[in-house]
Image (cartoon, rainbow, N blue to C red; front, side, top):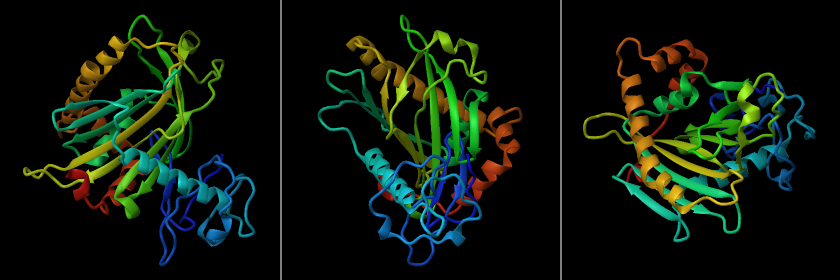
Length: 319
């Protein structure tokens, strides 16, 4: 693993997942891109389209083939395309091929299964009466005991979670490479991308129950985008989360009754649970564990405070 610090070639910020970590800046007249992830996504044929300045980096090591300036412009451009494609996917609603569920005016959900496959897609648009910082804190402090296997920076991590699955199926293992992108300057939003990595059940850093669980693969293109919305009439900050999950649980057949239960019962229930947790854990009362966790991580949350000050609410997102 390597650490990138300083400004980006030419812009934006790069990433972690249950967290955040490197930040880029756009200079006058420069294109909008992001810092390279720790693991290069492969070469691009468009290297000549951008000029990288090695003075933008304090440290660049172990990043694979680099340009004469010491920066792998191909990887930067490939990541820029990856971010653009993710934003387009997250912004789009499902079409007629998707099953659609609307819960009040705060949760829109689309689902479809790839024909003749065990692969599934789930898209959600979720509105909450909380600032983005609270949503980030909830993701980062999930279960109050996040299982971070390896942390490259506050912007990139490898995270393990054991996922409950309704009976009669076994609970599932998910090992993710999570990357966060600071898009405050370009899109007034934060983007978190995640995808599965190979799971070694003998890894001593993982729980002993790993060998008794099945593995769910979360495929590339999965992610969450967090946007600030205009405050409500009461002045309370609001946020919009666009979520896309492309996953393969390796079930040859999922009963339609189970799908209906998950969509119509479980998702609205989980939404209400999340709102209840946010309301209770960010009430300002003593003993709120999330607020205590936030106070104990100034490296992450003070960075967020500084960057979120520049977020402009999106009227289009709130329309």
